[in-house]
Amino acid sequence: MSASVTVRVPAKVNVQLAVGAARPDGFHDLANVFLAVGLYDEVTVTPADEPRVTCEGPGADQVPLDRTNLAVRAAELLAARHGIDPDVHLHIAKGIPVAGGMAGGSADAAGALVACDALWGTGASHAELIDICAELGSDVPFSLVGGAALGTGRGEKLEPLDVGGTFFWVFAVADGGLSTPAVYREFDRLTPAAPAPEASPALLAALRDGDVDALAATVTNDLQPAALSLFPSLRDTLAAGTAAGALAALVSGSGPTTAFLARDQVSAARVADALVASGTCRTARVAQSPAPGATLL
Image (cartoon, rainbow, N blue to C red; front, side):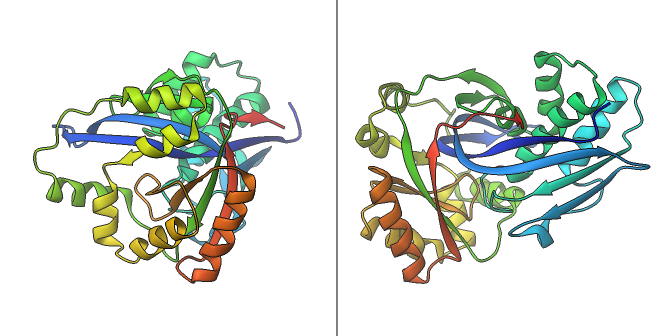
């Protein structure tokens, strides 16, 4: 058994998030086009006398350090399947905004799963890991695989997508967070008769061709009106990024992080500087996509 294992996991941006009406089970059918981006958390696991989790980095004080943490649940589920005591110390180094709509908690769960599998030598198959990820949450399977994918069902059924180039993004981190369930409740209030979600052929073609202008013209997020309703100041952030030359601006997932598509790395740096100077966000981070999924370091 190794002394410790570290796994790096990426954030995500939803370049399309089409949301259907609430299902009887409370979830929503989605057409969710995920793109992994180069902002990362690192999850390190070491043997311990009992399960515990620690966290460092921006927003670490907001991360639960008990069994509600998805990384802990990931370790428990894998251990239960293989008859192992989940006695492990999980240490999370945060680089993904916390409660920011970029799947940081889901990334930590995927990272913990891969790290514990390596630490314990369980030899879980890819299909088993994906199955556990889907049990943990709708975004967790994508955090495992990375790259780009279309998520259907509640987002957990993944179809890999080709990406024909590199896209440059700026992510403006807001002061404060948004609850994903609260954003979906507001979506239901604002959109009582949501149509069945479908992926945009034009957006999928833009990704495949690496066409930044076509992608900018087709990015959409059905949760954005709900996020703006609950967090109105995000409108000022979106406006500041657009004024600075971003080709597209949208709320990332359920928010409140906002995402800005830039033409190139120089333009991205200029947009990031302008966003910070505008005073409409806490900080701004530049990242490229696509990025690899959970990776052993």
